[in-house]
Length: 497
Ligand code: HEM
Ligand code: PLO
Image (tube, rainbow, N blue to C red; front, side, top):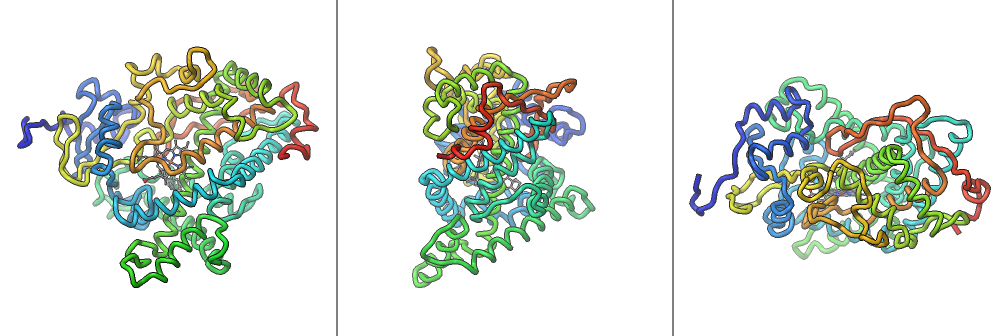
């Protein structure tokens, strides 16, 4: 078909059969895999209807970059959906909020705060190392008695405490009831939000009783109570002179906008209401915890499947860091194989296999195709990262892909690699996430070798699709490395010198 602009509509899928598959009622394929498979029949870029919304699916890096970078501003919108509206009080956050002055303003404040408390400041490294230390002592206690552990709650607590320190200037001990509560509601949210659920496709279904929606509302109200409590505590102790954390940074921006109510940037007009601040903190908190924890769990899963990769990282650590001190951020440059492993993990199991949907803010085009204002665009990062033309044997886990031919330096061998997205909506936490992944993994592998407990099967490599792609639950044996000096490193005093 030709349109007025002389360009074509993308190939269109028949609506009904696809909805069936999307809801995983007929197809056992998960959405990201199904979308990749559908290329065979419809081409790299095609469109379909989800309920009454027209959706374009992009499976190739050239079109992906046109959406994210070349026409980044045109495609910077976000759709409103029933579940994300519940999570974010109708899009008052950064990740699910539509493109607007408020969104821009919040992104700017958070970006500055993350630079200040994160990358720019040595204290975040100290915080991460203290958590790595505490994680390693839990592992060593289990190792001492030969106990196999589900690492998920331990990794979550370590990562949560890093983001707690950044957002709230606080942390949790093992077994803290508030933390156990958070584990529960956060899993409930991940299980129900933004995963092609029936209500997001057919919003009118809300009028019927719906167990998922009830669970989501319950979990969100528990989360909001906790956020409100932290926020109220901060308001009491707030001072313009010290900025302890992200909440202080947001409160300060609010104060200065309020004192400035002669100009047009009043607190309300730029969206610095309490609700906006709470939702933004909720985003950073949720993103900060769920993403990094998920990658760490995938890391352990793949390391158990590939003892040779584990050994090579340990060799690299032994050669460059040794066993008389713990790894530091400045070691990153001398541990290319570990960095390559992290890159490969983010390729083979992308945290957000379909990113977050984008929306065209005006009539536009994509390649030769016309795209109407309001069209939703799904970037299938899974297809980019598993493109056979770009990656040899894409399902093979091979950190070596990211090393140069001498094996001494890092490369990115294909343009079909965007683990953090790109452009206006690029991930805000990339630097923080990379610091955490590097430090947690290097601390663990310096001290332990990870294996599956005797008699257990290797953990599944298949992820569970949702707002993040999660690995299955399983138990791990951490064995203290034979040449690791326990007295020096694990319980010792000279670890953080
Ligand atoms: C958005 C990946 C960690 C905060 C995103 C997006 C991806 C992504 C793919 C969506 C981009 C788009 O829709 O075009 C990752 C990965 C992580 C990670 C792979 C860990 C390895 C973090 C952390 C934080 C964070 C630690 C917070 C400190 C955000 C926020 C957004 C976002 C706020 C929304 C940005 C916007 O819509 O403007 N991330 N992320 N992420 N990420 Fe991350
Ligand atoms: C995770 C569960 C939390 O309770 C709420 C939350 C907030 C922000 C979301 C995050 C969840 C999942 C991962 C998301 C993040 C914003 C950006 C990030 C979607 C739902 C990614 C990977 O895009």
